[in-house]
Image 1 (tube, rainbow, N blue to C red):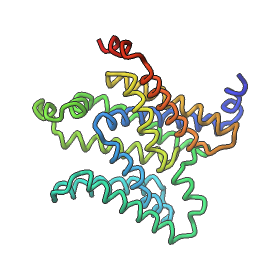
Image 2 (cartoon, one colour):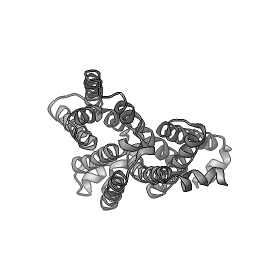
Image 3 (cartoon, rainbow, N blue to C red):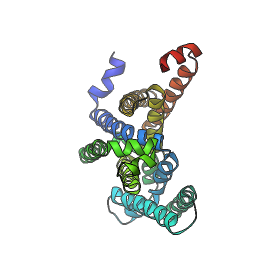
Image 4 (tube, helix red, strand yellow):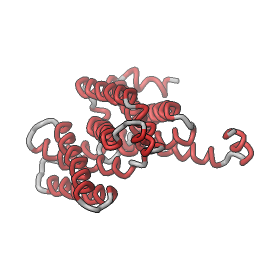
Amino acid sequence: MEWFINPFIQNGFMLRALAAGVLVSISAAIVGTFMVLRGLAFIGDALSHGVLPGIAAALLLNIPGILGAAVGAAVMIGGISLITQRSRLSADTAIGLLFVGMLALGVVIVSRSTAFTGDLVAILFGEVLGIGQSALLIQLAATAVVAATAVLCYRPFLLLCYNPEQAQVAGFSVRLYHNIMLALIALTVIVSFQTVGTLLVFGMLLAPAAAGALLARRIGTMMLWAAGLGAAAVYAGLLFSYHFNTAAGSTIVLVATLIFFAVFFARSARPAHTAEAAQR
């Protein structure tokens, strides 16, 4: 038991990392469930990469990286809305253009400076083991905002996921609630990059939520599964990284991905008659 418990009892940084990771798992589970059901995985990926130039510029200007991430996410969402509203191009095209453009801009900014030797690794892969009290409080506040918004907007979000036309008939603005959903994805990405990095936050948004979608039919149950599996991935990833000296953020996302495939193959291996009985 000491192998499983002592790293967190004897090291304050491990306990803070676990707390931050669990909070990320909760917010990512809520947002990721809607993202998977709504088919917004591409924009989630684009946002997780599109914040890179904002973070890089913020660090060059000696201002908090989280503010730069917010600006980068706002540019991404605003640009996507502008292109889709004022042209015949599809949302996928707009997302793809801004995705590669913002990512390229981030690389250009980084390549023009010698100040990113250590910061670049932290931006891309996070520094979960270096989480401080202030970052933990920010993560807690963001998780509370995500949860409260999901509760308040549950019905329109539900209709958007399954039947956008029905949402319009019920009197909900599809554009408004779609934008709120995008804002929640952006908020999760902006805050979580400090924990798992811009390249890996998409994995925490997608893998546990996708596994939850395989295990449950109701949205609330999906979120609970996603949060539980995400938290398990955080715990196991931190434990493995501590004992085997691997990168903590990457190990967490790798474990989350492996959990998804374990669930996927377990569900696929069920006998056909068992699956049919479960659907009745």
